[in-house]
Image 1 (tube, helix red, strand yellow):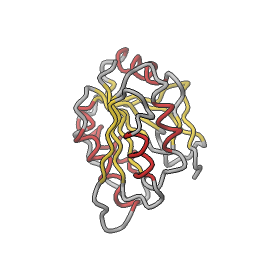
Image 2 (cartoon, rainbow, N blue to C red):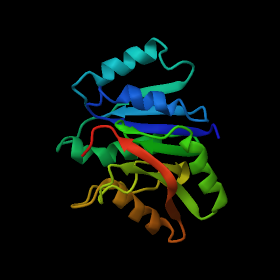
Image 3 (cartoon, rainbow, N blue to C red):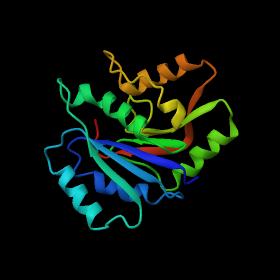
Image 4 (cartoon, rainbow, N blue to C red):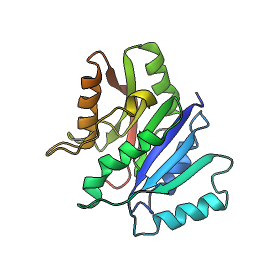
Length: 191
């Protein structure tokens, strides 16, 4: 399954993004990688541009874009960045991953198997450690056609992944998203 884009929003992730990207390249797929920065001020963009321009990641299709910050700052803009990422993807699958979440090696194959085995599944996710109630997934593989239709909101008291799951259910109540029973991602910064 090389028809996949890893879609990563960033905001002041200079200390974690390189580790996350290296792990992305340890998967059993050759992904496209699309990173959208949300106005970082810690050198994230400059570091990524230098790494991309110097071929640090090897022969991978990797793009870095910036989005206009909205009033309200980072927390109000995250759903918008995820929306923009989903709209920009031109592959069959999109793997939504935060810039401070380390996924297990070879996880994409297991997630793909879940999607192939259950025709009603439109997404397969990985839980995150440390486990917190308001976070449903550390990362999620979605069919891009579904991801483009998600209404990314940041409703009060809920993280945007909960709103995304509700939006998927509103598209078609037969659509399902499940967590992988074994894989667990690690949140590098903690909560």
